[in-house]
Length: 304
Length: 254
Image 1 (cartoon, rainbow over the protein chains, first blue to last red):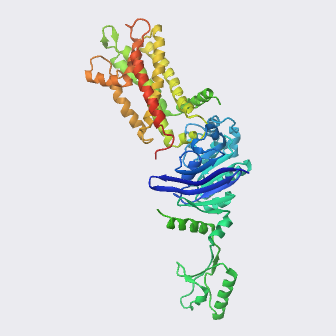
Image 2 (cartoon, one colour):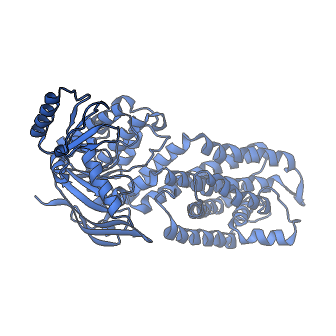
Image 3 (cartoon, rainbow over the protein chains, first blue to last red):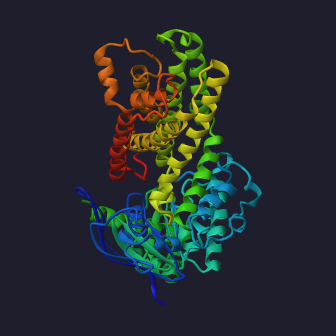
C-alpha cells in the first residue's frame, strides 16, 4: 500500500526560530495517525505545511502524491481540513453552510447525509452562530467531509472541550475509520491519541521523539513502576538495599521493573519488624507519565 | 464545476448572507435612502444653476454613495471579518479557484448596485421629480457597471491595510466619509474652493458622482459620454485589482 503522506527531513524556520527541525513522517493509506505534542512543539506548523497553507524551509513533502506547496487545485478535491480556528459563516444555517461548501467540489457527498454522519441533522436549520461549541466542531467536520476526501486533517479537534464533549467527538472521528479515510490528527491529549489512532507520533521542540502504539511508547521510555508508602516517623527506615528514595510528599518511593520481587522483599521486611506500610501503593506508569517523559526531556535538552 | 456556474452559485450565497446581515443591509440599502431624503428634502429646491435644482444632482450623487456602500464598504468589512474568523482560510483549503470566489463577491455587489439604481431612480422620479431621459440610460448603466467593479476592487484592496475585524468599519469610514463631502455627494455645487475640487478630482468618488450626474443633467443632449470620469474610475479599479492580486490575505492576521 502506498503512503498518503510522506515527509522527509522537514524544516521550518521563522527568522531565528527553528520551529520544525528535521521531521520524518509516513502515513499509510487508511491509517489514523495521531500527531501528539505540547503547545508550541511544531504540530500546527507541520500540519499546515502538509495542508498547503505554509511553505517549508527545506525537506521533501508528498501528500497524496503531490507537493502541497505547488499542488494543482484538483488535489484539494481529495483533502478535507478541520482547522484549529475557523468560524462558520454566522448568517447561514448549518445545512446551507454545508451546501455552499459542497458546491466547491466535483463529487461531493450528499449534504444532508453528511450532517447526519456528524450527528447534526437536528440542528440543520439553525443559524451557525446559534450552535454550541461542540455543534460548531461537528459542523467543521461536516464541512471537511462533504467533499468526500480520501485524506482528512484534524488540527486539535477537541481542544477546549469538556470531557463529555470530547468523548462525543471521539465517536465521530472513530466513524471516519469506517469511511476508509486516512486521518492525520493533532492533539495534546495522550488519551485522545491512544483512543483514536492506529499509531502515535510524538513531537517535542520541533523533533519527533517517539513513534509507535501507546504500548510501544511506554516500553520505549522504560518508565518504571512506582511503589510508594508513607512511613510513620517512629518506624525504622528501610535498609538501603531497597534503593528507595524520599518522594515529594515526605513518603518513601521505590522505582522498579521487578514489581513482584520488590514487593515481596519489602513486605517481608515490614512483617519481620511488625510494622505497617501505611498508604502502600503500586502505580504502573500512566500514558500521561510516558508523554511527559518524552516531551520534557527534549524540551530541556533541545531548547534553542 | 465550471467557473461561471460556480461563480453564480457563490454570488447567490453571498446575497443570502448579505440579506441576513442587519448591519450590512442597513448601511447599504437604508442609510443611502435616508441620506437621499434628508439632502434632497432640505436642499433640493435650491437652484445650483439657472433652471437646475439641487435635487437633480443629489439623486445621482446619493446613487454614487449607494454604489460605493454596496461594493467597497461592504466588501472591505465583510472580507476582513471573514479573513479574521478563518472563513477565508477554509475556502482556501477547497478546490474552488480563488478568482471565482473573489469575483463572486464583486458580482453580488453589482446585483446590489443595480437594485439600488432602480430604487433611487424611481424614488427620485416619483418623490423629487428628478427624471432620467431614456437616452441617458445606456450611459447610466455603463457608469454603474464600471463603478461597481472598480469600487469592489477598491474594497478588496482596502482589506490588505485593515488589521482587524474591529478596525474595518473605522478604516472604511475614515477613507470614504471625508470624500463624500468633497466629491459632489453631500455638498453639491461649483462654488467650493479650488483646492478642495482638486483633491476631489484625484479620487474616484467624485468621478463616479459626476458621471452619474451627467446622466441626469437636463442640459445634456442625447446620450452623455463621461469618458474621462470612466477612465479615472477604471484606473483606480485596475490599480486596486493589481494590489489585491499581490496582497490579499486568506489567513487571519492575529
